[in-house]
Image (cartoon, rainbow, N blue to C red; front, top):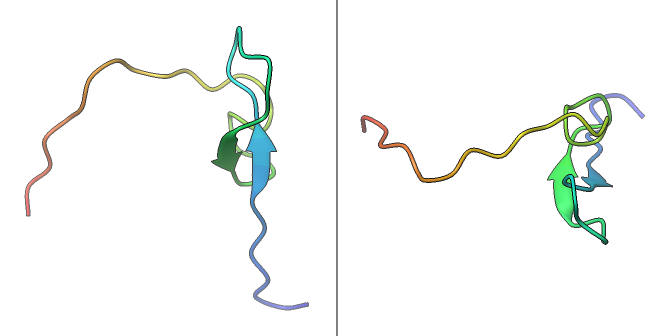
Length: 44
């Protein structure tokens, strides 16, 4: 189906359940994503 968008569930290191959404080839879906503590301000 053209234009179809897919999200998959991924797992963070040390987690026991799939709960993070990512695109199929994304870092969390592949098990290599890293979380950064804190939030970053963005310009609006």
